[in-house]
Image (tube, rainbow, N blue to C red):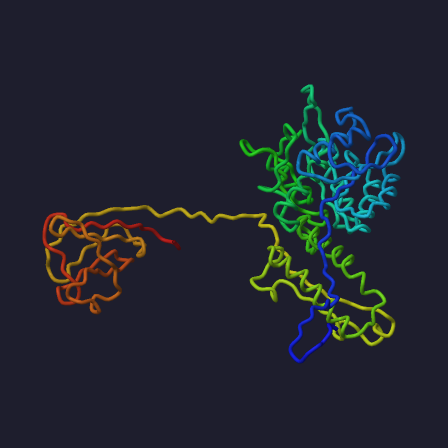
Length: 456
């Protein structure tokens, strides 16, 4: 308390002890591959070459790391595993790494090794980028289905490999996981982890072309098995053309079928896990619950404002509950605190459908009006599409457009209007009292219209 020396109002700033939940990193990658046995934290190709040698030295790991940086990656742990040692052994070395978001085993297609990698990703709230079985689309589909059967959603498979050229212009093929992981990192920074890393966002740099061209039949098979295609578009480069997890096969009802939704959930889980560690051993009562609701809500509100969730207002986008509605007395007595959080993520618009209909035949007819009261003309082509009719009348050498009404009886004497029976094609003008009469003359009424049956 500040010293109070005389009567008056005193203001003192005091901390309320409110914690802030910060978003964790989203694109720290780890690559495990055949190389000298060591673990290195590298942030450039030069760092990698100092630790492992030239990236184009003929091994898959170096090419993948090079493509990672070429596509926007900035932070990667590299685990070298000696020749003949299972890559799965290298996963254990990652336990000492504090932050891990993206996991790649460049070129690895052994099911058991990838199962172990998927389990590691699940445990670390990381995401596994899975390489294709060479140029074999069917083999890659089989691999994806086998891994999907584990129930894990923290991974996505891609096809085909990429063609790359070394510094001497020699072309070879390499696994795409390094390029894809780098692209993920780039999209995270530029647009947010909730944006689909595919399509317009999914451009891959550093490669010449996909090693295999994909026709419609192959694309359909890949989509049905949740294998994400890599395609080349003339003038638009090489692009990842899918954002499905292993659980995103055709007909899937999984909540985690889309890559951005799954990675957003992993990001939120890890951020909340790290940001609420202070609550351990705090008294499990209403003041703690209120503080957790406030802090978790503030974190989710920041994501809502950034566009991470669907919904027009916050109440439609997320909720946070912590209290008697999420815990029983037995939970409280035994030190169990439960926070219930719900989010409404934005789903990718994978299928953009245009409804294109064919216009009906178009006709134009010109008539000579006599100027008689209630002039009636008959269009030759029937039935007439009423909303397509354009009627113009020549008055003093100038064509004016008249409008359609349902009943001429409701029109005034000078109203330039007409009525139409679409089935018979009969078009009627007024009598000078209920609607104006067209002036008499040669070819002074012209009608453009569409005709035919159906909904238009």
